[in-house]
Image 1 (cartoon, helix red, strand yellow):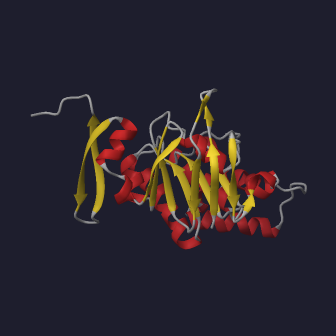
Image 2 (image 1 turned 135 degrees about the vertical axis):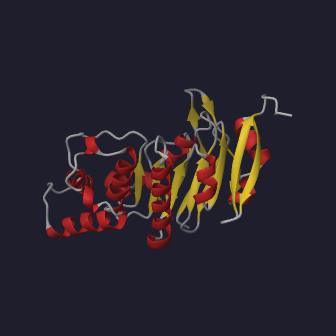
Image 3 (image 1 turned 180 degrees about the vertical axis):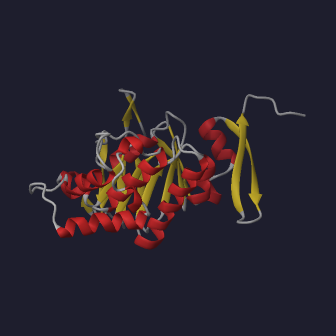
Length: 264
């Protein structure tokens, strides 16, 4: 077992409480958490990364309760990338990468050959070594996301959690980031859990979808099991049609709000 949440209850909107929730990951896979704005998918992701505390229950990383681990110990096993990251825009990509690689250490910040090698390895894997001297303020949104992922890799994590990895990206950058995540799973064996608003990209790149509504899991399974008209209607109050593209037999979703009349 890689990651396991037992009898979690989420508190949200200051007073509402979810039902008990169990969630587990047994093998490296890309898991997309989907649901409407009030589904609390980000709340669940933050609890899995120990950013937030659940009302009840526990999260285990290979049988270890993450609550008893020190922050730097969690950071080396579970990398969490927030939707909004506080960072100095004047830093170069290399400076940010190196800061991220060191910030959870108990030692003084000091550059050494081993640290440099780890940073350079991550830059090369993500294919952004050409950006090292560029300031963060000059990056596109997609480049910044790739840099954030590369920085997370310097910790050698077992689990990567990302809030909305393709939010605000153009279609080229969306495909670039999602293809990178797939490569991380296939080549490095990472477990990747993300929140997603784009249902089509979630269906295309995920091994598993977890559908949430008001803090509760209503469906959990592979894309074929969860990406259905009935479940999407339950989550978003929409009617949809699915179509299959011949080149990769991948289901894609087209939808209209349920209360809008369909054209004749």
